[in-house]
Image 1 (tube, rainbow, N blue to C red):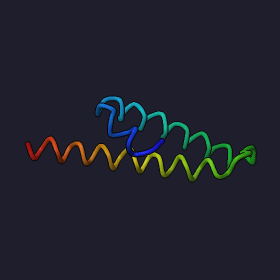
Image 2: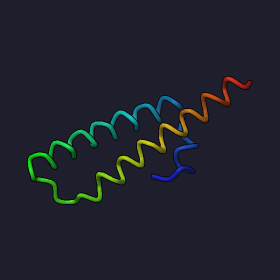
Image 3: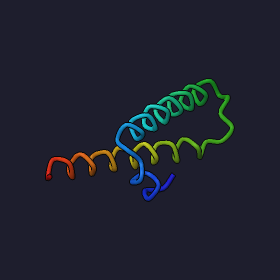
Length: 67
C-alpha cells in the first residue's frame, strides 16, 4: 500500500483500511506471542501501513479544516 493509492480513497475508506490493519496487527502480535508467526517482517509492514493511513487521514482533515 503506497501513499498515492491512499490519497485516492475517501476518509471512510481510509478508516475501514485502518481498522482492518489494526486487526491484522493484533493477530500478528498474538501469533508472535504464541510462537506461530512465520513472516516476522509482515509486522513491520503492517505497522508502517497503519502510520501511512493515519498520516493521510490527518492531511485530509487539515485540508478540510483549511477550506
